[in-house]
Length: 319
Image 1: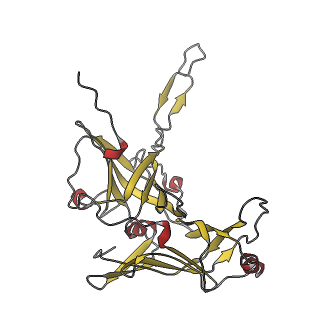
Image 2: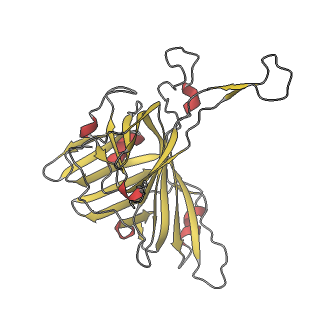
C-alpha cells in the first residue's frame, strides 16, 4: 500500500517581498527566504458576531455572522543578514562594493510586505498574506553549551490585511540561503565603554507602537479588512543576563542616569556584521538575587531612547 503524504514543517518555505503600495504590488519571484529554520504561527480570527434572537421561542443562539477579520501572526527564524530591519521602521543607505555598508535611519512612514507560506506537498497548500506589517520584533540569544543550540532567534509579531489560500508555489529567483547563521559566539555587549565578556543570554526588542484596531473603520470599501496601520511611539527595550564578578552592574544602576557608550554587536567577520549603538540607555535593575548553589548571575533589563547608529556590513547589494 502507499501511505498518505502528510505536511511536514521541514518542507515548508516562508518568503516575503516588499509591496509597492499597502496590500498590493511586489513581484513574488523577487522575494527572498526570510531566514534559516523559519516558522509561522497564526492567530487568525473570523470574530463571529452572535445573533441571539430572530423571533424564535428557544434559548439557542440563532445565527452568527462574520465580524472584523483579524490576521495576526508571528515569524521566528535565525538571521543570516539584517535586511528584516527594513520592516521594523528603518530605511538603509547602501554604499561600497563588493562589501556593502548599510546604514539605518528611523522612518516615520513604514513599509509593508507580501508573504508566501508554502507548505509543499504533491498538492501544496500555499497561504499568501498581503498588506503585512511588523508590529515589533525580538532578537534573542543564549550561550551554547552543547549540540543543537546557540543560533540567534528573531521573533517578529505581524499583522496582515488580507489572505488567499492556493496550491501554486512561486519559483523564486534565489531558491535557498547559502549564508551561515548568526550565533551566540558572534555577540559583543558593551556597557559604559567596557566590553562585558560574561554574557549568558540577552534580548533586544523593537516595538513600533502599532495597534491594528486603530485602523479599523466604518467603511464599505475596506469591508472587514484593516486600513493602513499607524506607527506611534517607537520603543527599544531589552535584557541581558550576566555572571557577576564585582559590583559593576549595581554601580551602573546606582547612577540613576543614562549610561553612555553602550552597544550590542553581532560580528561574524569584519565584512559580515551589524553594530548597534544606543542613545539614552538605562538599566532598570542591576542587583542580583542570592543563589546558594550556583554562580551568581543578574538579569539586567534596560530601555533605550533610540539607536545612535545601526550599521550592517555584508555582501548584499541593498537593504
